[in-house]
Image 1 (cartoon, rainbow over the protein chains, first blue to last red):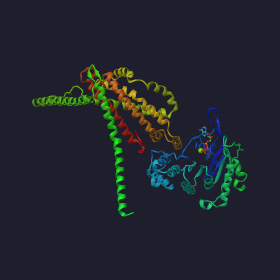
Image 2: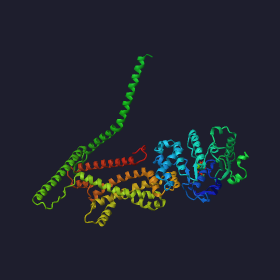
Image 3: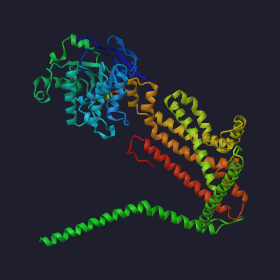
Image 4: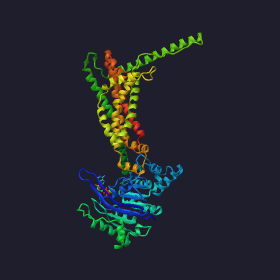
Length: 287
Length: 333
Ligand SMILES: Nc1ncnc2c1ncn2[C@@H]1O[C@H](COP(=O)(O)OP(=O)(O)OP(=O)(O)O)[C@@H](O)[C@H]1O
Ligand SMILES: [Mg+2]
């Protein structure tokens, strides 16, 4: 496995506003290995989506930059597929056509027509949506739309899969179901994933590492927590696992003690790089 | 409770349900047929009362009855004219046949009939002209709107021009268009008549703007998420426009097209009147100049015809929108 597959180094961003520019992020450093599952967690408005959008290339960092496989990222591209919070499917295309649009962008030159069709169907069956291939997004449920959004990204075979609260808008049951599918798919395909979440259980269950962000403005990475739970993980047995609960406690403590709600006055935390956290012994050992 | 009372209760319930069904059916009928009919009848009554109180130099203002008589006359005139034309062609054929019988090598030709244009000819001319003008306008307006909607810079550059020309009345354009057409469209064997082109271009110039403005708004308000999707996929411009821009702007483009067509239809009548171009507008003008006792009635027939055709044109656009719309559940008005 390649170390430093995706490198976020010294990233900061300022948004222009009426008055002074608003500094959303400062000194964000993180290196991610190939095949790793990373969760970004932090209070609302701290800058998680901004980090993700910078990795995607949709936002341009004011300073610092993103390096993916040794190349700098400066524009969006299909090698960094994004699962949007609100699925972002084209409502006038069927489920199949939505995935087809993405597949054709990536594989138009390398796959034959028949292969493309097979590949689309294969990816839709990965998320168990092959039965509704020819429906429009308006005719399927929210959970199904989100699954199609995931299939669209998987079908692009991206180097990195970026997910912005992919399950945020779903009910608990659907969410659990999709988390399981995502874990299974990621185990099988070994995708590199960066996922934003508000849900502590979800973060612990799915991630190899949880990246906890400090409150903005000028937000940065507060702590990084290694999750050394064996895979495949089973939500039922983990629910009573003391190790699992210890991880949960740590994340909760970070969110509700060290980084209180941004409504109360935020105290700027010293920026900590991912590397320095792992060097000084992973947070899990400290627990 | 005995079985008998239960049965009678069920029977009562059933009759209640039938009554309820009847009532809901009645309600539907009232909504779809009775209310519009009531409106029309009341309007006709008011019209009759008002008309009988207005006397002009050309006689009584026409009421519904006069209009009915005049429309029948117009239809009769149309048939009479057509019969004349048929007779004319029949005579020619007989003559030609005779000529050929005498001398098989003789050159024969059929001369076209040049009778007076009937009311229905005028309607057809108007429809044809408005369709042509509207088509030109659409072909210019939609691409222009898309470009302005996509690029903030182009929009800033073009917007003052759009805003300046948008409120210009067709009557102001007409002299210019007439002169330009006569100057530029010189050909020995013109495919289009000059009058036709003048009317059509005037229509196009005036009905361009609603489509342009609505297309710009439609294109500029594409969902941000979809734009991000297109950036992640690195869609090429043609694919982006075809799969994302046009589908999301379609509802507003159609709003614009419907406004444009309505504007075009209104403009056309005015242009035909002023420029003496053939069509319904000219019909009205000629009747006005005639000043016979039946003129006002005939003009009123034209007014109603114009209204009904405008209404039908709008419904046609709506039907087209329904056909091309991806969202079959959407409510169209
Ligand atoms: N385009 C923008 N222009 C100006 N300010 C922005 C812009 N995008 C984000 N911000 C600001 O940057 C900060 C971080 O926003 P961001 O959307 O990344 O938060 P988040 O952590 O994703 O929040 P949430 O969990 O609620 O989605 C916020 O204070 C927000 O107001
Ligand atoms: Mg967000």
